[in-house]
Length: 523
Image (cartoon, rainbow, N blue to C red; front, top):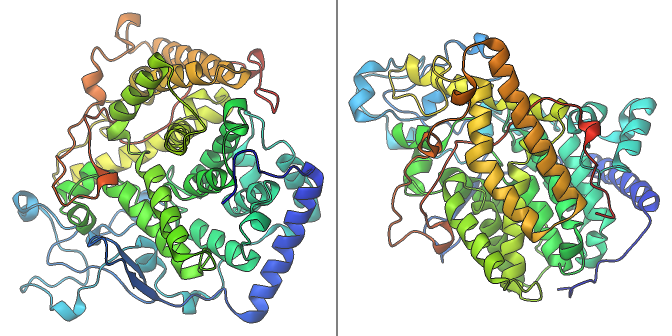
């Protein structure tokens, strides 16, 4: 492993050109060898009874006597999961109607029951039938689009980077191309002797396992978080302290932090008795699934197979520790620890555990940084996450389940959700991050946050539905939900804490972002 400050410095244009050439040759080689078609793989970690890594071909749906029928998909064209895979609670079972193909004559035979560790496997059925992924890398895009994408990558360190535009210019391949570019720019392929074909295949599989029809939790969100993480890694305190291994793990964690997200939150999975909730004992259910899914892809592609087994396992566990930190229900735990370190001024970035903690905080910031972006970008994220919230609420109403907080479109508005989220979740976190890294970038983010919050308040007042004194929720309890206690057998890295928890991240407001200075590489 590399020591602090060991990251090589190479000019951005040279790195960009090299990355695109590598992507081009990598895809052609994979196409010739036919390795874009994936085979199933199953592995088991004997040290952890919950660590099952399963990748299978074909229909891997979970059948049950009672389920959610997919009727109504047409009105929500983005719906990406078949809710028949979710088991209903016993007290609401009588209100649910079995979907097509479900038998009401007793339980299904064990032979037909299969675990679903990737919702995408059910939706897309078989990779052999689909052939190669429907991805169009930069080298086969229109020349004008390719040129614009290259120009955008030269500005990937700027805070007003438009990930939506970049995703269009790369024909929906923003996560693959951006992550590959950043890893290559840091020289991590050479430092860790990463096989270019394996890396490219891993990133393609990661992007594919995000649900593209989710309004918010999709590959574009992952690319946006990865770009934000890159901005934080360049902050002076981190840039001079992080090792190459820290940087590699930080970027991979950002790219995979919401892998295979079903578009519903943890409370929904718990109250529908979903098998993932049972597998992870109702604690950090989604985050554990994201981590295990990422590890499954790492093992399937063999990206770290050339490393000593001990090093590979250590990197997998550190990756999990970073992803588990994004559980919003553990916000108070991490924020309290961060605040204590800052008050005591005892953070020492030459200490590996302190560097890892700062990476966790950086990933948490990147995951919910939408309210700190310019209004033109931030408002789009607010609309997307609200759409996802309200759709979950509609599903819950339809099947007579208790509607989750923030998911009822009748009692919540996008503006009030964003104001509450900014007040009780985003502002406290970024205020402490600003104390830790008092740079131009931090000032930029806090500036946007304040202006965006004021803009949402202005929109509410314009609608005339709320008086100024009612703009913010009267109590942070509105954004708090209990987290089940952790059992003794729970993995240590997945332990629960006193939570404050909005079901997901996003937000922002209105104003001219040009009034705010933009963070730069000199921040």
